[in-house]
Length: 253
Image (cartoon, rainbow, N blue to C red; front, side, top):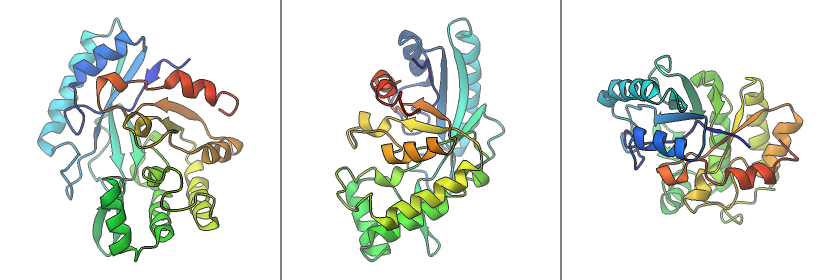
């Protein structure tokens, strides 16, 4: 069994609970290491990211929690570094490299805001072509580790968040497969681990983690390493379904 969770968010950005609530709950769940993250500051979007003026207070709070709970759990201060964030990661213990936006004609559009928003973006920005949206996403994601210098690859195929049951596009379609495989091949060169992220399951969007099983198999065959993460935004979802997915994927990872 795995005893760490390095991807969770708190009230410092778009999470529900305080960092201390998350740390205490992690201890109660038997974890030995916990990483509390903020969504990196992005100057073009303050809807879910940490505010600039709260970065230093967050880091200070995490330092306090490290000392307070040092005899019970290892506490790390993390950042989920978006591709389009330019705030440095050196002040944090580690970084998760992620992509949350399409960037088209100088404008940013959320990849994972809501189903309705996603449909509207594809209709208006990509002329209704979901594979075009997919190709835009993965062509940017391909260089996420080079751009962010992060330590962990975050939710690799976030683009499928609303695509349960191939609702919008066929994940076996050659255009889709070529797009993600091209990105995966580039990211694999970084040698960094990919997270197996159960966050979309806990929030009711998916029934399987990121990445999809096909992606996990492809990555593993090419030497990838993995870590489990919950991407929890509330304390009750820390280490969400770890046991189930660790067991289900044990023959692969």
